[in-house]
Image (cartoon, rainbow, N blue to C red; front, side, top):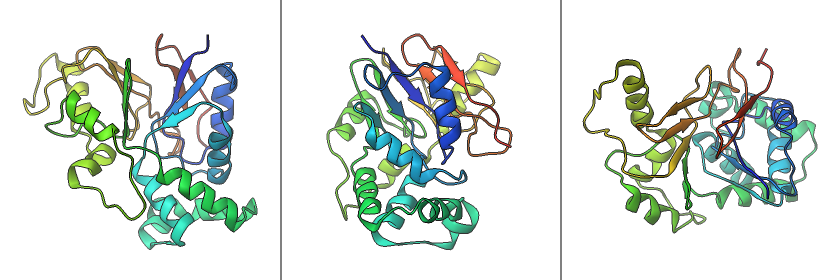
Amino acid sequence: MGRNLIAGDIHGQYGLLMEALEKASFDPVSDTLYFTGDLADRGSGSALVIRFLMSLPSCHGVLGNHDIWLENYLLDDAMPAIWLDMNGGNMTVASYMENRISNEEKALHGLWLRNIPLCIHTSKYIITHAGIPLGFDEDDIIMTTQSLRKRGASMSVREKDFMWDRGYITSALHFAETGRIHNHDRLPMSTEKRIFVGHTPLSEPFVSERYRLVAVDTGAGHTGGHLTVMDMDTLEYWESSRVL
């Protein structure tokens, strides 16, 4: 029986992803690979990351804020300056050009991204990009996972919080450091499931039993960071080399 593995934010680091998966002895036939979003930007291999993930027989993940920019580029050729100049979008565009990705394949990549959910809820795991939006309980998570985004559909502010809101992990980190809950609007969610998130780059994976939280973004999008792949059941993890 295969394992359930999860990769933290990849940010176009195709080589680091391959390195971490090799260290984990990833078997694409028997293992399932999950991801926390932010697949592109800042690294030079965004197109190869998407192509690889799409090729896997069992791969599931959630939408990150950078993935929205990539989707809009692939389907509508949108290239806002805030993406190109400030968030690594120029590296993503270069990746698609240098690898000579055809317009047909770009469209397939974009449609694949468009069908990625904001959160995943299974019998054992909850996965979101940034964390748990303010006021959400497990029933809200279940309701959100029941519908995928459709072409042209807009997201509510609360739905966008799955991609942006760091309040839950901030509270978990504070509790781990002090043993005290500092924000009673961000109490631990009542669930037996593990909550896996990315979005907030840390030096190493972070686990909070009190908050049922596992954070796996270890800064692959930043100099000095690395990419982490983790076994979702044992919490054993494997790290790539550092970003130069």
